Length: 421
Image 1 (cartoon, rainbow, N blue to C red):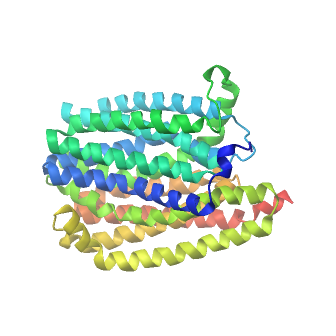
Image 2 (cartoon, helix red, strand yellow):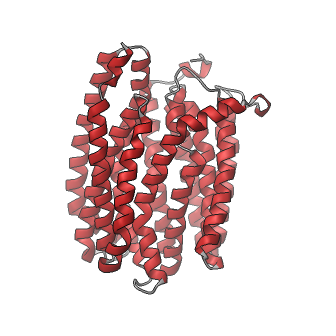
Image 3 (tube, one colour):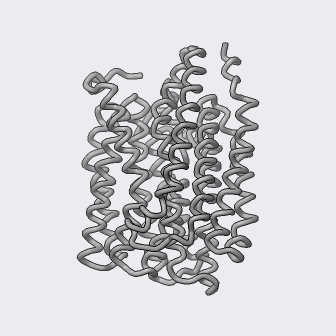
């Protein structure tokens, strides 16, 4: 790892604080954007924004290709940042092409098609920023990555909300958001990255780019399947809306109910710096420290998950009603079921991340595929018969399936580090 002057000018407390703030801002942005839309525009606009964001969440996996997880733990710098950056440019272009094909195949009307495309452009900016955050994390500077996430998401929320207020037009507001996001990357992420690495696209290596894509492909497949699982109920609701089975506003209600599920993923904030640290322990063959870190993480997750489940089961719906100015009282059972699914996904994610540190990520396709199959088989039929409750059942069944298979794989390979002795 290269020593840079900037590395000596930060304390661990600041790294931790900015990592927390950045992760919170990143987790909250979709909630805040939907809040702005529901408070400013009508139910149809809210439904269109919800499904557009769901499509963007799916296709961003193409843009990121899950290289971040591999990049952040590449402590020996097997691949240069030039090639990580070039790979990201390539996958961003592919994402745009896939988005165009996706829109064409679904035959959306012009308004919905434009909204989906613009949201995908916004998510491309997320993917571009992500490669810089991976560089900062790789150099143990999660504070810089956290600042990037925090400042950019605050900016995006403010400009998007102001644009909605003044224009009352969803498409124009998304365009303003996209331009602001790319401008921030150019003015913040890119200049700071030069403290760590110099970008020179003329020094790229096609062999390295190929290697990055090959090594990250199992993680990409897993992420694509996972996001498909997360969004399958939303796609099913959209399909039922197009067929006239569910009413306008149901997509919005489900997305609001689904927001607290991401609260479960906030527990991963504490794991992000641990992931790089665990990789360092393995590289140094400090296996006892690795095991201690792993146990500490699992204990922390159990405590956080129980606290979140109990508290949100009691106050979740009332808070959502106040924030979004809706009445979700009839969805209490659906909400609790979704929370159980969120907890299941958090623990499955932990198992998978530890296996990634152990470089067993290729095996994870099995667990993700299992969850995807469950989602694919249950989403349409459950949504058609039970609406939002059916969507909740489908999601949670898929998460439990993913967790169950992940636990089997984890227990088989959790001690594979001993092979390095």
